[in-house]
Length: 312
Image 1 (cartoon, rainbow, N blue to C red):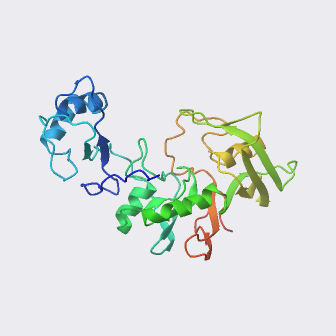
Image 2: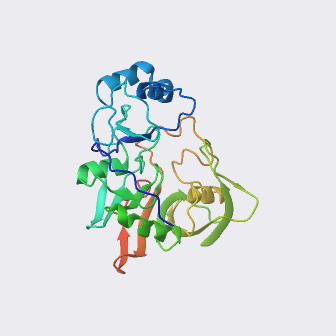
Image 3: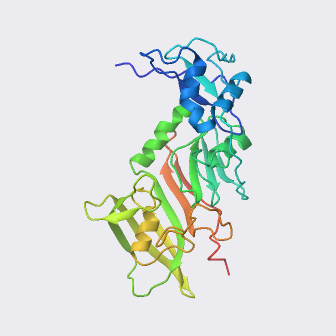
């Protein structure tokens, strides 16, 4: 069986490290859209306003596969592909640099700061790891092989060439990457550590906090205490699975919620608001894996330190 044909390359360049939006015109059996403009108004008028759609057409912001501007009065053709750049809502710059601990012709191992989302999504578009790396390193096809929560700092493996991405994603899917995290949380001498925590974690769309519920476990984390002082502990966290908020949920369930976690145990009124002086005390510190392309063993370590545990 033949694979699905790849769509043609975008005729527009990236802007601020963000790809243009691609739109495929759907079937129109009822003939509701005599012109391209009619469809675009139906599709986008609620989100951006009819006036803005007309202005974008007048400015030549919608283009076809040949890069030519689409006229408002062009006849509608089902299946046609159009591209355009969205209007970016102004974003507050995340005032921390991205570290790069390794770079070659296949990989970039980025050291992400707290508060920076990994990929463009929702209200975080240009202020994301991917957009900033593409723009800053001149690597327009760079993609992450996995994700790291916006509030978590540390290592993210990014792939330079799209053709290599599947091989590295498979490492994470098949749990062939050893991930080591560091966290700061309360110290409780009554909690026996190290230990392995297994539970069933459920995360509902649109709900900020994940939760544990009875049933077959779908998550596993090993939790080790490295040292403690003044009522706080520094912990090594080794996830065997990758559920959303897994480490935060497991630590909270033990009665050891991470320092400055705005979601666990209680969701703060504005948990998505950046409070740069109170970063979540969670760091993706180590990535270890055998390179699926070269067979070379790799071990990368973050250069970041958690602010609640300064070196003394």
